[in-house]
View 1: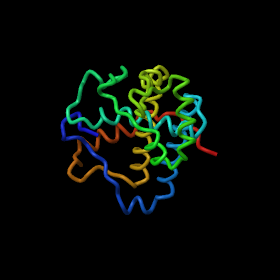
View 2: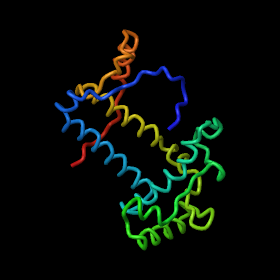
View 3: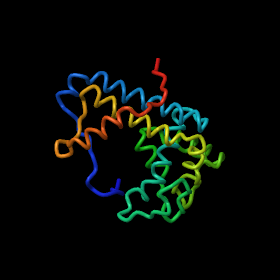
View 4: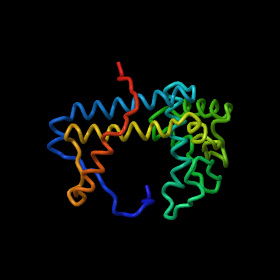
Length: 193
């Protein structure tokens, strides 16, 4: 992913010793967050687990070309759908290989996603989202909640001693910002059972 802002930002780094001492708790924080977010997305799109996984890969593939472009098109950084010329795509065969799902299963799932207008086939075999996926999620503030969950994981890694500010970044000003950042309201999460 490209850098959008100036290069002198506060950065976190993994503390290998602290991580080793708290690895189980860090793994739980990460795993629980990923599970809860994926379940919420899966339910939001009303898809079964395997269908959701295929759809998510198509979503990421649609945005990947734009995200990796060397020059940022500021007009497309928000929720508006990406124009087809800036969208990426993926084939059924590549989905099957990437997810290790039988090709016939991918073919059936893609047919269902096409029938529901969740994806489009722009050229023979080139699948991408139909546009507006981010805008639909934004209507219920899901991308923001997801970002907050990842920030919570980062804050918990700092609290557990598994992450810290990069040595070159530690100054009284950045330490104060980090303390203020750590005290932000955390989203409500229900732990997995």
